[in-house]
Image (tube, rainbow, N blue to C red; front, side, top):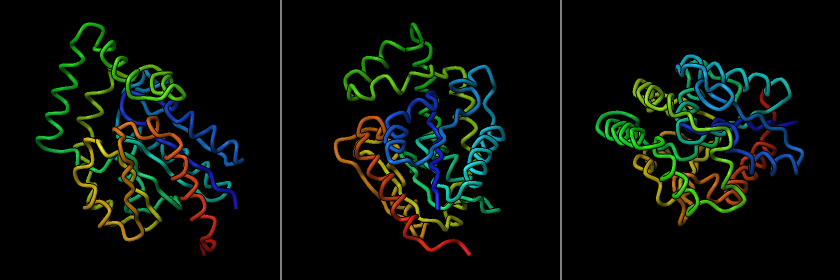
Length: 243
């Protein structure tokens, strides 16, 4: 049975961040779909809303489910949204889930601090682009360096998207997830805060921490993340067909 991988990007970036993963999957003849959330990438002119974001994920998942099994992978904000989606009260047609760099509850002081820092950064000349590029130059390998920003940076969607995340009930959603799940974090990821809690709430889950890696685990260690994709695909292939 065919498995299609659906990928949901993080805040400010776009579907282009998954280029290395999509090329890896294509070499294995595994179909994939990488979406652009509202306000990001090819949809930069749109306003970000949770309703539109969930509709985007759901549309891609249901299109993929017409062909067979679905492995959903989300990074950062895309991972948080995907947790809420997979753990919805009405179970979507998702057979496996990879949640990368998204094991923190986006509420309270932590979220306020992140928003304040992001807004301050946005007020710098060029919206802080030179600093961002400097950091990416020194942390990402040449093979993925251009991918993170290839679809443009969604500066205008950033604060409204961050503010929207505070209404997610992730703990309730995590308790409802019944599919094989992999939580993947970089060792130095600032969103590792609740990783053990998240993993403890999902019965069929594994926590994978990648050494010497930042929040951008998919781009900083593309081969490691591709190996996680391979692991998830092999797990789904070995599972009996859904009744």
